[in-house]
Amino acid sequence: MNMHIFPNSAELGQAAAEVAALALRAAIAQRGHARFLAPAGGSQIEFLTALVMRQDVDWSKTELFHLDEYIGLPSTHPASFRNYLLTRLILPAGIPTYHLLEGEADAAKVCREVGAALNAAPIDIAFVGIGENGHLAFNDPPADFETEAPYFVAQLDEACRRQQVGEGWFPTLDAVPKQAITISVRQILKARKILCTVPDARKAQAVKNCLTGEISPRAPASALRRHSDVTVLLDKDSAALLPCT
Image 1 (spheres, helix red, strand yellow):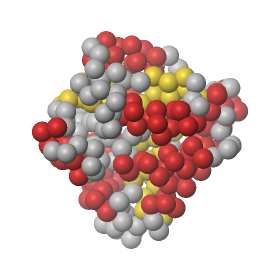
Image 2 (cartoon, one colour; image 1 turned 45 degrees about the horizontal axis):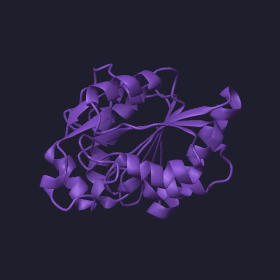
Image 3 (cartoon, rainbow, N blue to C red; image 1 turned 90 degrees about the horizontal axis):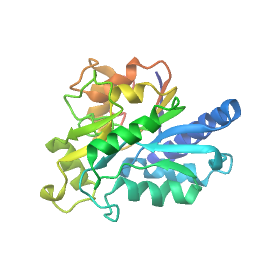
Image 4 (tube, helix red, strand yellow; image 1 turned 90 degrees about the vertical axis):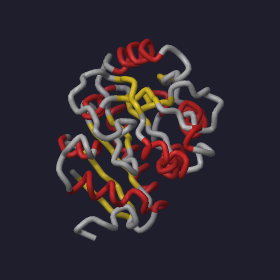
């Protein structure tokens, strides 16, 4: 695992965009296109903003899959990850091919259809973060490290739902959906490369647990340490509890 710590979230976002752009360009050069997993959430905004502004990625040769989506939430809702990715990445970059998880459709059918598209060819790079409870996508603890399903319906724990309120996506805990479609841990680990971008002091305990503790379903993002090509980018606040800081 390659880990780098930056003085602030702005520098972290720029560095993440550089790593991401390099991986996308390499995939396009080698295979003529790049397939990638894209994250959503407040912690990823600076990274995605910096990535979209880059002029060195041929977005016409990219294909996007996203990590998760709330069940029952309309795409017009500010917290919808479809809305997030469309407005912050897909439309600004001009990505022609993308596979969105329709949270208002039949969840089992969405899992099957998007999962089949995802498994049609390898993913070149997965962009991910780490939640306050250590979640990876919406794999809350204790995460299922064994399922081979590309996507499945997950029950969201209270810590995860409180994070969404704290970030301002929902006004109250009761307003946060209790279920979501999420990509599985094993599916993320099938990507050729993984870039994990984690800013903010509120993630510090999760970062410590997942990067230095036992690899365990109780710390879902700890599974990233099983992958052979992972880059983790932190800022000084998210890295504050690590032994090296």
